Amino acid sequence: MGTRFQYPRPATPPTITTSLPEHPAAVMIHGTDGSVATLCIDLDTSKALKSVVDSDAARLRKLLNEANVSYVEDFSPSGGRHIYIPLQQRLTAAKARELVEALGLLAASLDPSPHQNITDGCIRVPGSRHKAGGHQTLITPLSQAYATLRVRNSARAIAALRAALAPELARNKAIQKRQAKAATTVRTTAGQLPVAGRSETPLRRIARTGLYDTATYASASEARMGVLNHFAACGWTLEEVRNELTGQFPGLAALYGTQAKQARLLSSEWANAQAFTNAGSTQKRKSREPGKINALINNTSPTEPTGGHSTAVPRQSTNS
Image (cartoon, rainbow, N blue to C red):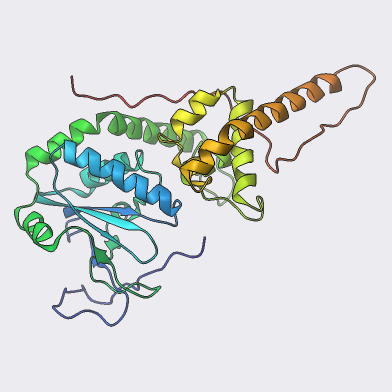
């Protein structure tokens, strides 16, 4: 996946000039008091495949349009996208982070870290040089972008966005409470502090982002089968899997490359996953017979299915 580019922190507070910097540079997000004048949504190909980035951008555009929130969008040579939501009234760092993390629950490729770092959070704006060559390119028509940045979003528009994100805001708060509780209950060893880890399994992370470890899976097809084996072992149905390809697991859809390939292969691969899971269950039952020593057969998946059945919970709208 490569290493994340680190922008060197300047010795003195940076100023924005009219001339383009000679090297890749980014704009600081937070003011000296930690507040922000613009919400910066970073959809990054280091977090998910480009097709997931594109679908995330479409999903967020729809959400923002329905909430009557205006925005400016650009894309980078690496395939990532930025969505900027300018504000009439500055938001505290905590409120801004809360909104961005809630949006992240709808977009697997969203990197919330710029809004999670008050001192160093930054973003590369349209026109900026890119480390891979080329520049950050504005998608929004220039006249529309200018008007959006000049008029900005009212407090009412941001309130509408919060209302639209009510399920995600509640989920994010619940996740943080669980993580805080886990951190306080873990006993520390000498010189170590408890770390609140995510409960997401590696296979579900692949299903969400489409990114996989090439040392574990030699190809996208092997990664797909690892994910499908996992869902079959968790008791999912083909219909549930198919529904989540455009829901919480766009990465699995991206691993097929095209919708035509997905339509052609999904049913047969799901049948193979069920057969593999059933064969493994049969072998496990046989291995429990007294006096017999058996080993699992057909264990072609590098990672054994884990976890319990987790039926997707549809996103609830707050609008009546």
